Length: 224
Image 1 (cartoon, helix red, strand yellow):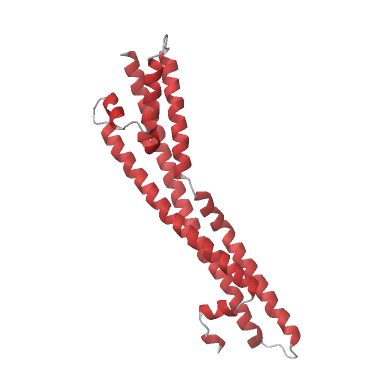
Image 2 (cartoon, rainbow, N blue to C red; image 1 turned 180 degrees about the vertical axis):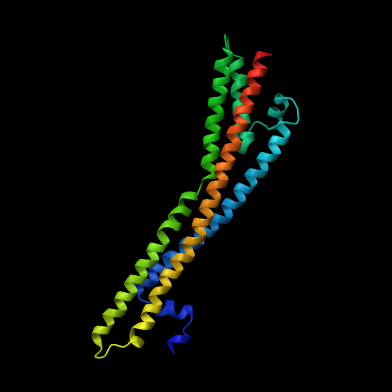
């Protein structure tokens, strides 16, 4: 009879502690998958936006015109557009000042771009720490549920005169479900975290390369 039990039957017959552990793991898995889809969308959009902005930036158009085309709402901009606008805005502001030193103007623009870069990385890395936490802790949470379930099964043997495998096998099977669900929650989270961390690092390198090239252009423009 027990050999025919489904996964749902195993969960329903498990002890309260094991069921609570399973509930935590299922919720963690649902949240992690929600964040996986969200980060995939955000990072994909960021990569496409970076490619599009680089195309516009290197098309040979006037930087002032590009700056005006981005609009006046800094909060609506993200990625390279936000970094460019932040740096160019500070560059223009400092150049209008009296006795503005060219190098001081460039340094000020670079600091402003660094602040924008930091905000952008914070936005891209949102929820990645949660995925890392789910990936690293879910197997141990599942193992705790399994150990507790096995302890509960063997404890029940104290109430019978003759201990057989048939008496403990169902309880052990129910307990092992916790380990399986823990791995089910952990594996996608770990894979997604590593994948997204690599994509964020690639975007960061892309942003920093743009900042260096943009600073060089500003220096040339300042000399002119």
